[in-house]
Amino acid sequence: YRVPLRNAVRTAADKYTLNGTSTVPTAPEPPTATRGDTTAYVSWIATSGNGSPVTGYTVTSTPGAKTCTTTGALSCTITGLTNGTAYTFTVVATNTIGDSPASDPSTTVTPAGVPAQPAKPTAVRGDQSATITWTAPSTNGAPITGYTVTSTPGAKTCTTTGALSCTITGLTNGTAYTFTVVATNTIGDSPASDPSTTVTPAGVPTQPAKPTAVRGDQSATVTWAKPSGNGSPVTGYTITATPGGATKTVTDADTLTTSIGGLSNGTGYTFTVTATNAVGDSHPSVASREVTPAGVPTQVKKPSARVAKGHLVVTWRAPHANGSPVSRYRIDINKGKDMTVGRTTRKATFRHLGPGRYTVRVIAINAVGASTPSARISIRIR
Image (cartoon, rainbow, N blue to C red; front, side):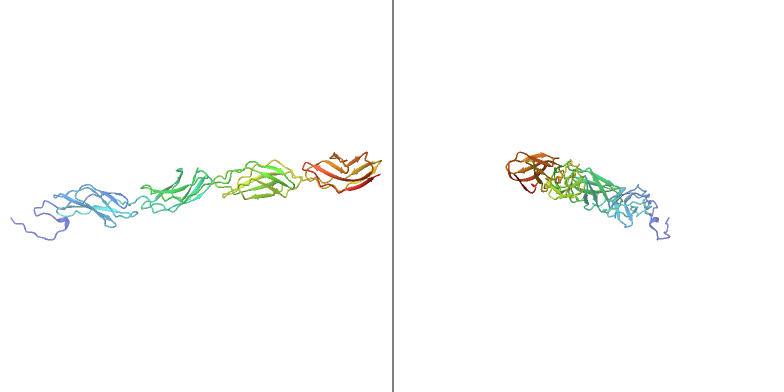
């Protein structure tokens, strides 16, 4: 028998051999896709060849129409994708008859890589700490979930869950550090940033030790020991008197003694020392012991002298003690007849002097020293 062909027009799905035994492969099941870095790995299960063995598969992306092919393997990797873009994938099977219908699309995947390398961070020193800031790098397809900052030396760290600054603590004042930043997303860790510029943590100087003070005339000389700069060199000192608040500033870090003036003789003072560096001022030292500035007594005013019953009697008024009590008086006369009397005495009597002219002066003495002698007076004994 002979069978005539009634229709010479056929679709791909209708292809068959004259004996009616083979067609194009069955449409594959939806593939599985796993994202990579600008790639996707696509796998699927084998489909029926419908009478003619499957000779290959073609995977196509949407969007972009990127493809990968195999000669029978059930997976391949599509490259050249854009990180951060969502893709689906379909699979077409091929045999000697032709191409199958495309599979249904895979579930959506978004290719991604680790974040881009962060830019060089900036660092600001603190007291045993440093605060580091940086800019967000490219996410490379997957949101950044955190950052880790690491110090060199010491490998001290701080982390954030997205914030662009953090503070590393536990650093050593006076040691120079640099810092790097690593960004993290669900894929992994970025390359570490280039190191920050060097910073040296520092605090204010340590509290100076208790100073010593020696009184002067309306002044005091204060001496102290150099404290630690705590990571930043000491640049100077401020000495403060109490009461009154008089101050003296020393701008040479190696000068450890100074005189502070403007004080009132007879008033007790204590002194504190504050050290300064580039970070700021230390706590004031413990106060020195109290000292009372003083000078020698003021000059005794011109004394009086008289002769009584052949004796020379000298009297005077007490001068100003100038901060330190008068302890005694010395009455000088010529001819080697000097006399010293106690602090409460205001009269001296010279007995058994021979006839002649005598000159007399009075000097007040305290713990500081002797006053300027009074004006001389002259008197004759007949």
